[in-house]
Image (cartoon, one colour):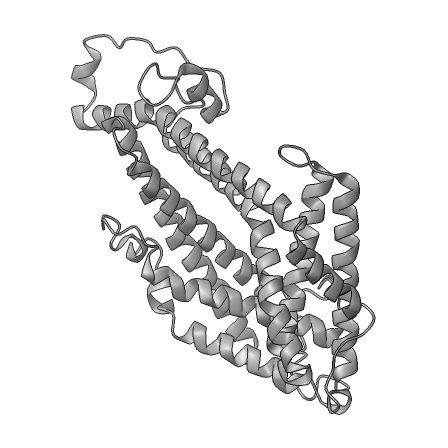
Length: 376
């Protein structure tokens, strides 16, 4: 018999959680924030940050997101002026600390895709042009592979079109990888410096002081103590459901339908407008998950895990990552005076990541439909 999952927003799921439960959740998240901040200061940070400082920054982002989400969902139970002052500041902290990790993950994703698309175990090093032999080897993550001249009669056995396309991709892959390495490593370094500057700023210290107060005193309204949290959590769930209903799930239910490639050759540098509704659903899904945590009194959301929501969230995370990676590849392809083989490799890489966007939409559709069926 299939295991049943109780929805904490259901009025018959158990005793009504009130403002006291929300206060406990916010205090726990504020304590996690302060603990992560202390760990970050103890571990220090070098040019790229130690492992401990990276973990501490991740914990800071996690607690800041949960506090901000709770202020959004349960704002009617909290002091309005305090909420409106805290939410944008917490979003600034979370967004600033997330950039370095995002650039690191984006570079790894793109270099891994180039590695796979080149059809070889190592990308060949190229001499001259955009990449030196050392840069090409570093971008591929492997030692350079010497190129051997093909025998003349090989051209008679291999279709010329296939040979040309594969050759252009292999030749341009190392240069494309080196170009992406330079651009994204520079962006990551700047993000790291910006994060360090932010953590030492008076603005961040003011936020930390407010979070320290929150760890002991939550500014609830007078009526919050007797107010059921579940209607507010249900409203967050309804907003998510409405946003999902507006998505083209019927199209996403068919793999490789190429909808994510529409406008792929557009000269416009802005992100794909069709991605925005999916990004919005990702944010609403996060709000829904955090509201469930607050109702259940789970500081880190580890006690009870809804595997369906987890799968849907992971698919949307992959969607976001692939979308941003495709944009990075397109931006690199606009670099002036790059070789045609490099531009070709970046174009193939862009199309590959847009197909990853398509695959993530399909995975989300599958996860969401399972959830919908299970609640009937």
